[in-house]
Amino acid sequence: MDWFTAPEYWWSRLLFQRGLAAVYLLAFLVAANQFRALLGEHGLTPVPRFLARTPWRRAPSIFHLRYSDGLLTAVAWTGVAVSAALLVGVGDAVPLWAATAMWSLLWLLYLSIVNVGQLWYGFGWESLLLEAGFLAIFLGNARVGPPVAVLWLLRWLLFRLEFGAGLIKIRGDRCWRDLTCLYYHHETQPMPGPLSWWFHHLPRPLHRAEAAANHVTQLVVPFGLFLPQPFASAAAAVIIVTQLWLVASGNFSWLNWIAIILAASALDLSPLLGTGVAAAGPPWHQVLVFAAAALVIVLSYRPARNLVSRRQLMNFSFDPLHLVNTYGAFGSITKVRHEIVIEGTDESALGPQTVWREYGFKGKPGDPRRLPRQFAPYHLRLDWLMWFAAMSPLYAHPWLLDLVGRLLAGDRALLRLLRGNPFPDQPPTYVRALLYRYRFTTRAERRATGAWWHRTLVDEYLPPTALKHGVRSPHGP
Image 1 (cartoon, rainbow, N blue to C red):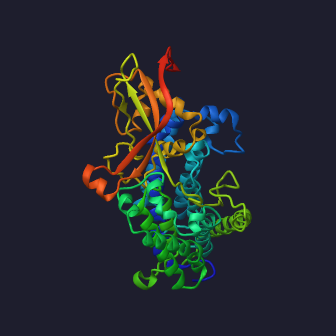
Image 2: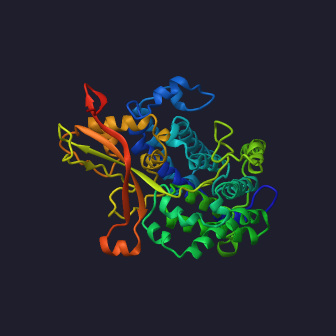
Image 3: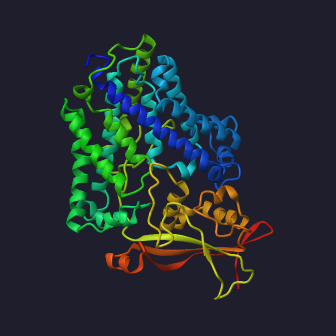
């Protein structure tokens, strides 16, 4: 490593860039498949309505120039194409300026989507992707050595991600301090995966060991990233193993995978694979690297101060470009799982004998006999918001009523976000929502019933609702 480049991290940069390109590709695919139904011109929370009340300085986006569903589709598929090109190595085959332009384009396009995404894009991994994507612009390609300054900024990002998450837990729910949070978390997390049932049924001493290991990994290990090699590689390896454990235990979009590729950038693989190009980039590239490093250092003041604050903010951006952010997850743990079950009927009159058919979601729990699926790193935005809505109707305002209206109208774009349509021939006459308490079945219940979940009706969440003259109307006496 010299004062500007670190050729021993040539392979680590390769892993980081290819991994980040894969995450970008998935993120743009999610937008192409889901954005129109959720945020399009006729979506649940339309972008044009948001743009009419939001100035550009608060949410910079190319969509302030003009928004249309066609333009959004073009942006999303352009992002897919550029991401795929970088994933297969085009960025290393073109001149440095072209690779820099490709990474810049991805960042600009995804920033434009996130900044009009409202609550559907309010997750910490959106800012994480943008911050990592911004740094990737200055990493160069195979023609130059990895810039030392950018490599250190990647470690600073990983440190804030891990250490911020650890602090928010210690300062938050008491169960993190007494090591009991994982008695509940595998069952109550937003979207359990296919192995979550088994994780939940691990012996309680192992759950306590999981929680203790989490504290060590997030509060102690990140400091090792700033030590000389091989200690930095050892710290990165511990983080990678921990993140893979989280990947196996649930669905957390691409959060864990970005943490893994960030940790990969701190690995020194030169003893195994040798070093790459050591030459520094041309003067214009060096100037860009120094300018970006200076900007990130200046913008790091408030996120760094947030880490030591007793009022620590979680998943917060201090600037509308999401350049340096705060992170954290599960500062409090839900002890009881509630789920909203949406049902419809095609009967014209309601009564005790009315037959209701359930709408199934792709990821969130519904049918108790259905094994939870693995979707991450793909992100099911509607399923995640349904988890929040089950905790409080405030999280469902104003989109859930519009969701019901779209089901009553048989909206095809929205129905494509669901696992299936129980009314394939014509829309239902009434739709209602019920609130259930869900828990994983015990081993004995699983053997006896074949079900993964046990659910108990708690209350009516939304009364039977019909469309009258194109307007939702709750069923009355």
